[in-house]
Image (cartoon, rainbow, N blue to C red; front, side, top):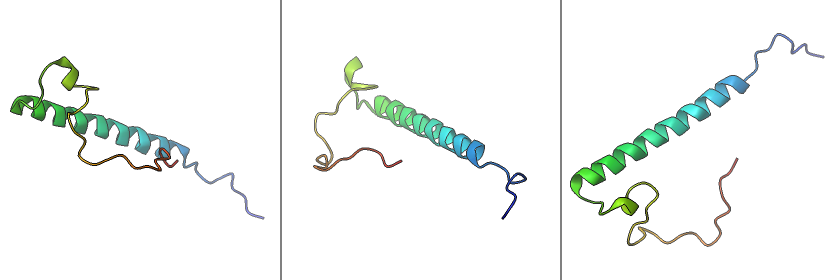
Length: 69
């Protein structure tokens, strides 16, 4: 039988990489919104964060099951 007491846990790197990915996604979304606002792509407060576009680029999938964890 193996002694795993000396093995390092992989939980901390997993948590840090997940948090980093989320932060990068938020920054990218913010930059895209700012660029769209600078181009005049938004009209009014509802078109910014959390707003909906007039038309969807592609229809939603019928069997959307949510995120895969």
